Length: 411
Image (tube, rainbow, N blue to C red; front, side):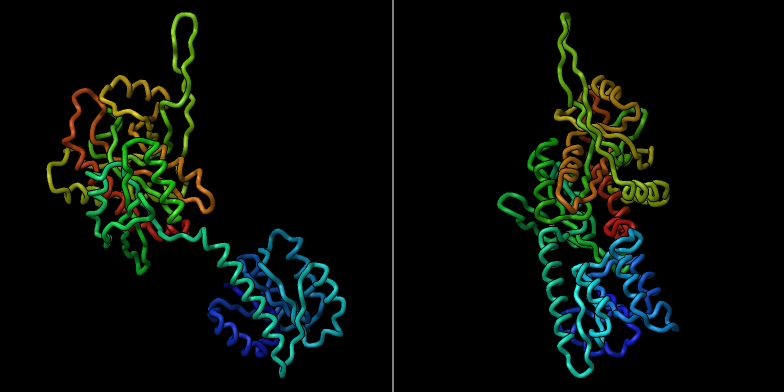
């Protein structure tokens, strides 16, 4: 609840502020200014649930009060797009008889004027009733859309993908049910004194459909601010190395389209639908991409054999499909759909699609998938654990460095 009081007689509000405290409105949620100019400056920058506006108001702190100053401000709030309109406006005056013109303008604009009295606190009760109504409306509007977790992580595999996520030092709890079929692990960590809440889960099957359904359930039940996918993928040889982490931007279904037949043959006509990242997520990943020392520390922390190529974060296109690939020729065909293709896997487009199809407030989706093979006939599973590890660790680096900014929308 944010309240702006605009009145040059600030001492009249002592009892009012006390009454607000009794219904849960803290003093730091109340601002008091003494002139119309100061009120304009506040309303240019911030939203207030309630504006309590003195009908006789000076333009400057040192000038005399005049009805015209309040009325000009009231009209500007209705007509000027430069000002942020408050949720409700209540006028206040000590003598309603001498401000009949102001009363008419307030009434025309559907607002109310209350009459101040230093020995009768009925006016306080009137305004408090207005605040209670605003509180109720705010609680009702936010009850379904309020975020219950800052970051939700969806993995395609319990092992090794979710397994590596749960090794992060994020105070994980035991699994709990969200509904009859979806279980999550809750966790949290702190950045600069700010607590970031996390949950992690995995889809029951590989593929875009299963991931989209699991993501949609998490979004509906937890309303996360950020929706992330970590895990493994196939890379495009010559573009990435084993263990490199790809930030998927954009993602699409490389099998989307239709088969067209002419007299001699049947051809597949591709119709990709690209889903991209928010600029906020991309720019923050770009910052950690250049931190070579931090990436080197990730490689050094892996318990096992790691490639000699080191670790890099690659931002680029990642294609999703419904089949496991072990044919380098197919990857080259997919590369024809986007010449900058960096990787191929089975789930990311489903996660992005679930986020973009969600009702307000939509989470910001992103995927950090690490290369475990090149989808060729000679591939094996020997690098899956290392790739799952680098993917999880890059997520940790991103969130523990920039988590509050990403959660708060860059603020």
